[in-house]
Amino acid sequence: MFESLGQRLQNALHKMKGYGKITEENIGEMMREIRLALLEADVNYQVVKEFTQTVKEKALGEEVQSSIKPGDLFVKIVKDELTELLGGESAPLNLDGSPAILMLVGLQGSGKTTTTGKLANFLRKKHAKKPLLVACDVYRPAAIDQLKQLGKQLNIEVYEEGKENPVTIAKNAISYAKENHYDYVLVDTAGRLHIDDALMEELQNIEKEITPQEILLVLDAMMGQDAINVITGFNDKLKLTGVILTKLDGDTRGGVALSVRHLTHVPIKFIGVSEKLDGLDSFDPERMAGRILGMGDIISLVEKAQEAIDEKEAEKTAKKMQQGKFDLEDFLSTLKQMKRLGPLENLLKLIPGASKMGLNNVKIPPKQMAHIEAIILSMTPNERRHPEIIKASRKTRIAKGCGLSVQEVNKLLAQFDQMKKMMKQFSNGNLKLPF
Image (cartoon, rainbow, N blue to C red; front, top):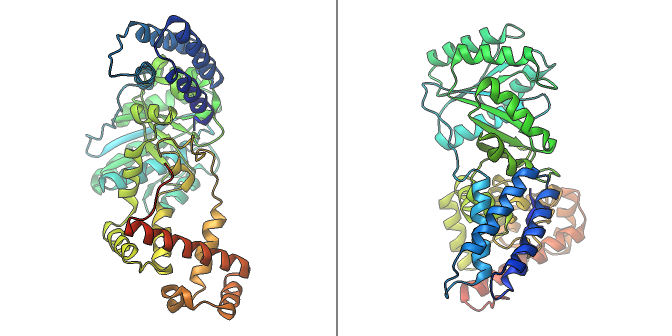
């Protein structure tokens, strides 16, 4: 997400770092580049105009201390204003109800039903409490079946009454949730191809009946500036509490995210970062501004690792690495834990300076990881613990067992051997880093 915009902004700011002082002339040059980058990213024209004007005024009005380089100061001003544009501070969900009721609304095709499942999964993992999914989209063919399938995959119950009145379904679902001690109720409502009076009236009736703590608009980030009209249309009738932007992992310019809060005053609360059912992240304006400007997002990286990685297992593996006893069974265990973190290319983008190192556009085919697993699983436990015993005949057997070539088996063993040598050098303190 934001790759093109981020690269353009980073290039402009890099030029500024080369200047000895901030002047009207070089600020003007920078602002032209930043303006073009934002407009190309489909940021609303009025937002771009206000943003560049504010940055220019602050940059020229700041007194540069002798200890601060002018370029660093300018980068800080841009990051602060970008953070402000994105909402300033993160907007947490209101989960005070018993149960807390979250109503998800949106146009057809925005990914609303899938997002309802993702949000239920997110809340369960984060708060270790029990969510209930409610099927109130009785018009779209297979919408109820889709939600039931998601519920089955996530092992989360789905409340449904078929094609009955959605208002009645929502009301009955709340009673059911109270009786069965559910903590969260997530109501998946019907969408249309456009905003119409019938859709809004039904949503208003559901809102009156269940009084949700949150009314979240699920919005496709790829729809461009028309998204602002959609938010305004829903907000005029429902008083939205937040937006969930989906498909930010797709080929999108990201301008909607930079325009939403400023133009509608509705906060972005979550973003969809992958198609997987754990591909939903809380939206934090400061962290997102850091990502756009190539500063990375180490906090998010650490949080993901804490969620997915078994601490005791990680400590055990680290000790074996230090002792030079790391084997292919440990490697397989590490791979499985890494898979829980989500697509590896998404994690690489969180590293500071990822774009400069060429990590922003790295594509790691899922097949590649699957091939590594298949090769290791085709080995005997003794071979995994002692890969040095794997000679020609064993390699042939392993290759046949996993349906791959002997060359691929050789490649994995050579890479693993190289990795072990590097670990040994790290533990001995002999490895010199290239920077």
